[in-house]
Length: 194
Image (cartoon, rainbow, N blue to C red; front, side):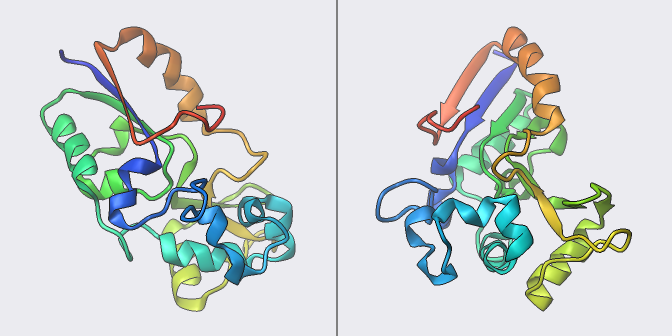
């Protein structure tokens, strides 16, 4: 077996201390009261972000890759597959970036719901320096502002209503038709469209 395809979800990051989103009682959506949201999913809603970016900024500070959480044994397994040349690709539903921190190359990851490494303006779409966005969010507890149009900038996390990354669409069918083995781990497969 030379071409292993992996689909991973929140379960691979739970032992790193990152809650999944939907588990009743312990999931992220059930524990967002401190943000005073009109509904839990508002934290990832573009319209809400435009009117009140602070809940997402506060949550991003908690979830920012490498800040409070470290890769798990599952992430190390993916990195080992990558190192041995067996990992064709890891399609991850996670935004935590722990695969990259574990040593999986970006070439071998498709982050279906985006990531924190890059950012862009939500109004004009112009890319914004990822490190500057990180510093603004983590050090100033504020959403970055686009220097071109004055709109809000957010990390390239897929919010509700946004399309999945182009990389997902470009690679999925080819990868599914040429892999030797598909491993599904840490997901209930109930999150559309993955």
